Image: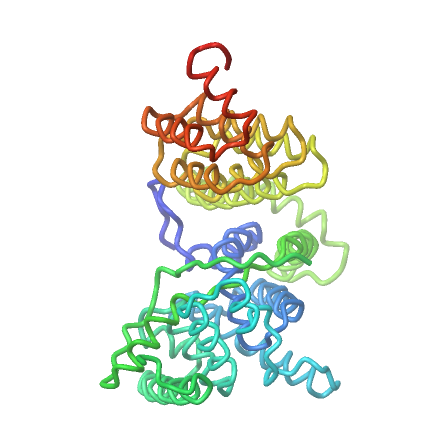
Length: 195
Length: 240
C-alpha cells in the first residue's frame, strides 16, 4: 500500500483501499469529490432529480459494500461510473416495470427551450436549450457516452472501463453518438449547428 | 427539494475529433450545458446512511476476518482492536494517519463550505448572520461564498444581515470579480434599500475609481434622491 508522506490530495484509489480496510469515513471524501458528477450523469439518463438522488445513494452504498472488489486494474472513477451506470439502468428497468410515468424518453428537465427563451432571449442560449433537448432525445447508450466523455473522462481507456466495453468499441460508439446528435439537433433546430 | 442550476465546466474532457465541423462544434458547445446541482438533502441522507452502514460493516467485517459469527466473540474483537491499535502505533501509522488526515481535512473543508452556504440561505436571520460571520473567514479564497455574501448584502430582508455581509465583503471589493459585480448591481438596483447597502459598501471599502463611479452615478441622478445627498455628505466627510 502506498502511503502519502506530504500534504497532497490522497488519490481515489488510496481512499477506496482504506474504505475496503474498514475505514468507511474515507467514503465521505470520495462522496464529496464525485457525488455531483454521478448525480448529473444519473439525471441525464433519468431526467428526474428525485430518482437521480436515490440512485446516487444506492451507488455509494454499493461502493461501500463492494470496496474490497476494487482491484486497481483501472481507475476508481471508471469503476464507480460503471456501478452508477448499472444502478441507473436497474432503477430505470424497475420503474418501467412498475409503470412509473417518468420514463427516460420523456424530457422533464427544468431547462426547457421555452423557459430559456423567456429568461434569456439570446440566440446562443436557445441553441444550447435545443442541444440539451437533442441530447435527451438520443438512446441512453449514446447519451451516456457523450455525457461521460464530455464531462468526466479524458481518455477512451477510462471511458471504456466505465462502460464495460473495449476501447475500440467506445471510440466507434462515440462517433456514432455524435453523428446522431448532429442529426437530431439539425432536425429540431431546422438547421445544422453551425448555421 | 431545491435544485440549484449552475453553469460549471468540468476540468476533464475527452479529446473528440471529427472530420465534420458541425460535430466538432457540437462537442465544444456541450461543455456550456448547464449542470444541475443536487439538493442538500442528498448529502444529509448520505452521511446518515454512512453512519449506519459504516459502523455496522466495520465491526462485521472485522468479525468475519476473525472468523466469528456469534456475539460471543465481541470481547475478542475489542481486544484485537486494542492490540491492533498498539501494533499500528509501532509500525507505519504516522504516515498512514497523515494521509488519512489529509483526506479528512479535504472532506471537512468541503463540508464547512456547504455549511456556510446553507447557513447563508437559512430562514432564520440569526443563522444567516452566523453564516455571514463564518463566510467572512473564507471569502477571500472562495468565489462562490463571495457571491453568496453579495446576495445577502443586497437581498437580505434583515438589516443586520445586510450590514454584516457588507462588512464581510469589504475586503473583496478590490478584487475584480466582486468589485465589478457590486458596481453593476449598484447601477441596476431599483430598491433604495439595496442601493443604500451597496453605496455604503463602496463608500467604506471602495477604491478611488469605484468611488469615482459612485460619484458619477450620484451626479447623473442614477441613485435615489435621498442617497445622492448621503453620498455627497459622505464624500465631504460629514458622515460614514
